[in-house]
Length: 94
Image (tube, rainbow, N blue to C red):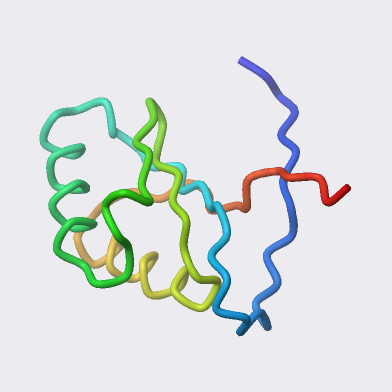
């Protein structure tokens, strides 16, 4: 496993309406009950379109508005989904 992680800063003052790719590191996603619960929550929320989500072995990556990140974190924590990290996927602006 790599010990190095490159991430972009999340600008909490971004009201542009432009979605960015954000990764949510989630514990126990390998368990079918946690993965199913997570998929149901995301599917029923109005924050994210299901086509904007990619599930991975240790979390999920989503295209989301910056201002919706805290709302999604709250939704996950209220439903006992353990969150270990939230970061913008590294994308160098060339």
